[in-house]
Amino acid sequence: AQSVTQPDIHITVSEGASLELRCNYSYGATPYLFWYVQSPGQGLQLLLKYFSGDTLVQGIKGFEAEFKRSQSSFNLRKPSVHWSDAAEYFCAVVPFSGGYNKLIFGAGTRLAVHP
Amino acid sequence: DSGVTQTPKHLITATGQRVTLRCSPRSGDLSVYWYQQSLDQGLQFLIQYYNGEERAKGNILERFSAQQFPDLHSELNLSSLELGDSALYFCASSVEGRTEYEQYFGPGTRLTVT
Image 1 (tube, each protein chain N blue to C red):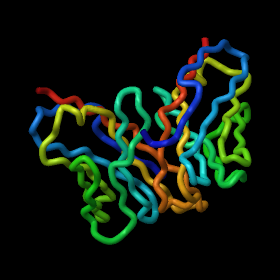
Image 2 (cartoon, each protein chain N blue to C red):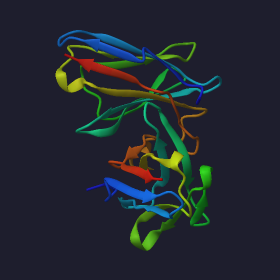
Image 3 (tube, rainbow over the protein chains, first blue to last red):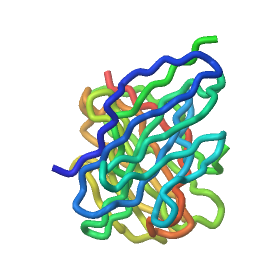
Image 4 (cartoon, each protein chain N blue to C red):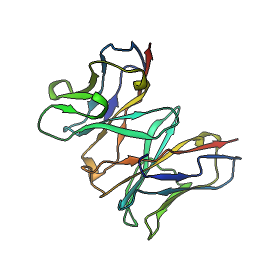
């Protein structure tokens, strides 16, 4: 079945530590890939996106993500986490089937940052 | 601030009632999307409009309907409400209706059905 999987529901890191949030997708062809962040009481904000080309994508707020076709993964990384990064992070895809532009979201990973 | 506005911020209503959620897209954006975020279903796409026309439909219940008006604002109508309809409803907009264009999300309307 077509799906987007974020294996980690909760992650806690210390401020200044590195971060990697995992995302795997299951679609026949490589979909368009996105990472969004949702801060408490806020809407979603796009961090970065991958359509094609360079598999390492730079985003806002110091985030980057790497697309690995062989692993059907699009993991989000940040070398040094700040307390303000505490939020919920969603991986999303736009599949090509049916020509839809809808975003299909993973279940999300809630990030807590210890001082 | 994404530039997408949604009203109201919070809505509390009873089962069986009907409500209307409103969304104003960013200036110049032609496409509007509606999403539902609930604890059990997560974030789900409901429906997309582009310049007044329905473009794509997701897991939208028959009790729900939407439209986009000539001034490009959109309304999501939810009727015969059930407890399970309690959720955060997001509107997003983009310049065009194609995937390449970033979707900007509003702050959401939190609906509580009692």
